[in-house]
Image: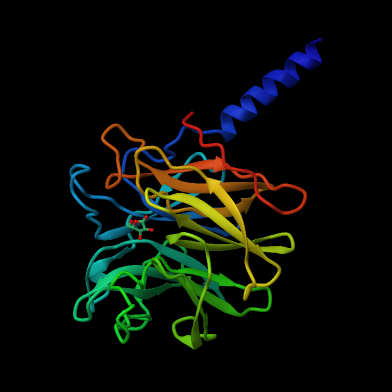
Length: 306
Ligand code: FUB
């Protein structure tokens, strides 16, 4: 019937609209996506790979911001934050994460410290989700603690910040050893001790989100990396390991994830080496649907390219 035909045409149109090709951004290299939903808009904060080929290592000096209201068309907002904005840092604009509190936007990032061996976490602040962002502290929020010989210079990277329903903020971070601490109300100082987490085969890229009654802790596992996750009824745990959420992301060793709910759907945002000269050091952000089971567990992500 005509009505059936129209409805089929409508759903074909709808799926063309909602399933953009992956990678989602191709004209510039983007890695380590962190998405923030604010005022009905998704802001996507990414790193920027500058390596000329995939035999190189990471070459990253600045971060980029994009926004979208349909998860398909991404508007560019340039680079409102670079390593050079942190006077105490020397290089490596690695993974970061942005949260909003009381009308201010806090961007937590990984950099290499100029005078303390190893990675460090800095925080920049802005009145707008698209910047400009300024170093909030003039020094690192977390520096490498080499006080015990089990510490490694890669410990302090990949911050992920989560604000619980009661307003308490937490920062999760780490490589090899996952950890978290509370943040003070000012969002730029740790409040109290740093706690270790016990997560199987943890590599890096912690990410925390809440959906329904559960808290979810997702992370990169193994190397090359897959994404695994754990669930809890409380942000302070205990966390129950739930297995693999996403398989190896093609030709990239890493696939650093971000998970959001937006306009009634859930999204898994990650990176692969999916552009023509892409690979582990030339990465691009991808977006796929995420589906929850009725018991709160998450179905494995089906990565798509078109
Ligand atoms: O982009 C540099 C590093 O690679 C990030 O900090 C890690 O999460 C991995 O994606």
